[in-house]
Image 1 (cartoon, rainbow, N blue to C red):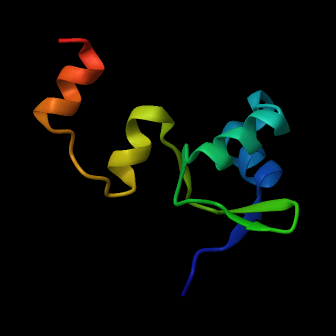
Image 2 (cartoon, helix red, strand yellow; image 1 turned 45 degrees about the vertical axis):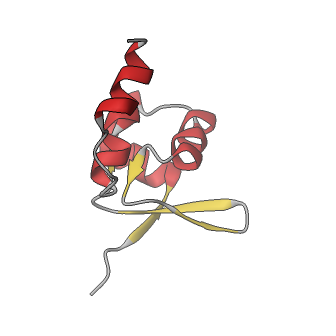
Length: 80
């Protein structure tokens, strides 16, 4: 059975309580892939799984099963 879907505002209230980020921040997180599993967009609204997590920039690729960074990519990113 799929997880229950919540709006971004509901998810933020459940996850962060009174310290929930502004809706613009939540939309940016959804757009940029910082929430895993990835929110679904229906019209203007994003819907998030109840058990979704904020993974940030470093965790977004790893949580999504992204490819590990090779030596060339690491050298390019580190400037060496």
